[in-house]
Image (tube, rainbow, N blue to C red; front, side, top):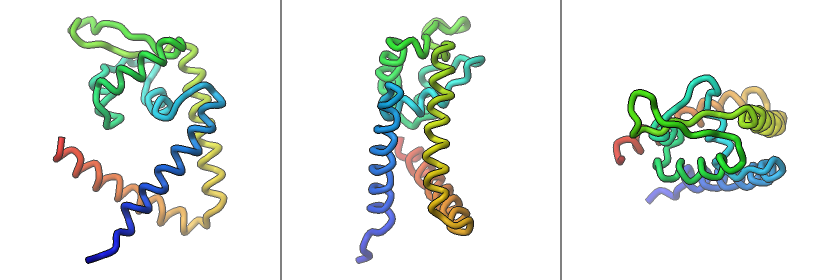
Length: 145
């Protein structure tokens, strides 16, 4: 039997990345996951909770809990869909737009810090491998849901 290499590495990297981001996000008053949700929102285009959940690969109930906290902070707003009142739409507020920009700056700083530790060749191989691995996992996950 083959000794697992990929999964333990991915789990370790994910855990370290999440822990590192948690520290950076705490400085701006956010929790892990909220950054990804804010990043996916377009201030000019409201999105449904279900579409947002699909984009984030989480359940709508998870998105709803995150939204509750972000609404309390005044970063996002919910509204009924004008065409279908059963659907809840989500949109960034002006404060949310500012925090979204801050989140993207945090990500960029971390990206630069990590990239500076790798050669250009290592960076290209890493990007290609991570993209391919993400695509494979996404396909497998879709089949299971």
